[in-house]
Length: 256
Image (cartoon, rainbow, N blue to C red; front, side, top):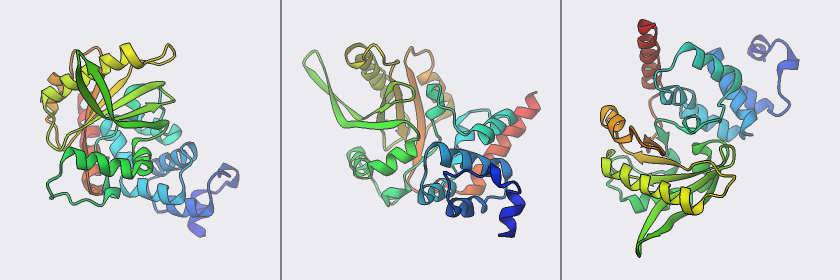
């Protein structure tokens, strides 16, 4: 109780949208900026206590910072003051995505169809991991070109961005041919599926690993928005992510 009044001395700053249990979880975070971020996101995304605890345990704050590329102090401050602002495609990205809720072994060989089936089975938790504004459209959505059928692994719609989001799952590292395939799907959706009110579709390739240099060349120069991100089947090591964020910030300061 004493810690609570030390961290929140003015009771008017407390949100009525969060319960005492929410604040108990938030008080477990010593970093003020990080705690503020989770508080804003819990309010904005209407997280339950259980959902808040999961996002803290899977280090969402650090993952978002790393997804920003060369994060800087201004990015940290904006996140802590406003939470995630979804105004462009880049804002919805995380790296890595965490699928620990599937309960699957990291070392066990897995087919892409098995991963897709597991994500559909746990679609509510997958939507939570994807973030705010996502609605599930379907899996294995068929596209027919010149009498040849193709299938998009998973299709979502983000109501904030007003964009379809096409996700391709790869149980291997990022390969250039996956980019070309997804680019074709995006062109089809832009031409045949989008309504007038929809913005251009977004493509995400979820893979087990990616080489940043190779990804830059594979994804560069495309008219469509395609992103590649890693996924992991276990909760990442918090300290490792913190160290990575600090290394990025240090590099940014050295270049200033």
